Image 1 (cartoon, rainbow, N blue to C red):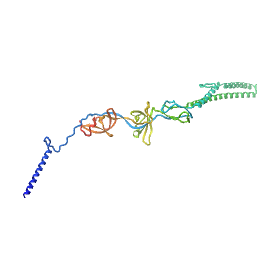
Image 2: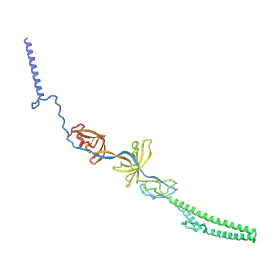
Image 3: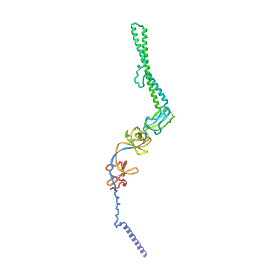
Image 4: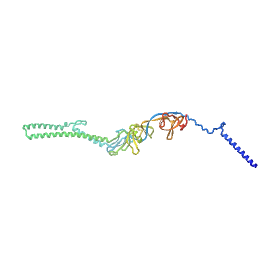
Amino acid sequence: MESLERCSKGEHAGMLRFLGGLLFITCLLGCHGNGSKAELGKLKPEPEAVAVATVRPEETSRTEYVQVTGNLAAEEDSDVASKREGIVWRTFVERGTVVRKGEPLVAMDPTDEINALDAGLAAVKELEVRLGVTSDTEQFDPENQPEVRSARADYELAKTNHERATRLFREGTINQAEFDQSATQLESARQRYALAKHQVAQLFASLGTQKVRVRSLAQAVADTTITAPFDGVVVERYVSPGEWLGKGARVARVVQLDPLRLQLTVPERNAAQVAEGQEVEFSVGAYPERKFYGRVKYLSPALSNESRALVVEAEVPNPNGLLKPGFFATARLKLPGAAKSYLAPLGAVRRERDVAKVFVVKDGVARERVVRLGDTFGDKIEVFDSLNADDILAADASKLSDGVRVK
């Protein structure tokens, strides 16, 4: 019995010691270092406002462009051919030679053509001497030719004799036979006179025909020298001296480098906005930092069935020869009209991959807006969409996130 009472008293004392320790720990947790009690349920303090400069976007306007790609091509590109057949006598150009229109590329042996021309000139001279005219004679009168004048004199005499015979026949002085002989002589003289004029006129016509033939022979001589059809550069020479050329054989390839053509494909949605005379800005891989310009000159009358795009050609000046046919070009085709845009400091824009953001400050809070960017001008950049002139932008977007308080 006594042992049970001693056990009960021991358990009671242990319980008291446990409760006392628990109370001590609670007091430690409920008190601050300065002895003040913590208030249960109190919220965490709000973060301090971020100090950031602000700026208003500058309203401006810009020309809209459509981005397209294309290739540069020569304005003229010709495989120059021979008009005649013969042996190549001399070549005047090499690959890369700059030529002007009419300058010689290749010459063929002109011996046969020159001989034919000399024969033709001799025939012309012979006819001129026969007719008593010169090469610059514009008016020709067959009556002045000796054979015509002689035939005319015989005709006039026969006519006078016939008039006399007619009078005598009426008077009965001569008989019918004599009168008939006079009439026959008159008709014969008249025919000889007409024939003389006809033969002289035919000779003069032959002179004209021979002069035309001489011009043809002179052209044949000229054709033995094959010339450049336009200003350009020789890309390839196909022949060498001593080769036999057939009619129509290629002798050289010449391309025109100034101006060039920029061939572009414009998407169907922008086809109605393209017109002759519009400006095109483009760059090429060979000069990535340079901008080149041209103007639309040709528009295809129909869209391509395969690409559903409009083929456009722009004329591009190339006075220094920097651009070459075959260059791939990335171009911007200026569209009519102007779109509203804003200029903002570069620091006011945050780029996250393909997304651009600005922060508009309103009532002390920064709110995020996704925008579309344009060109950069110094320390400013064009911003489109989601803005107006009354908005206030945070000048440093790197410090902010959506909903942050600013001061």
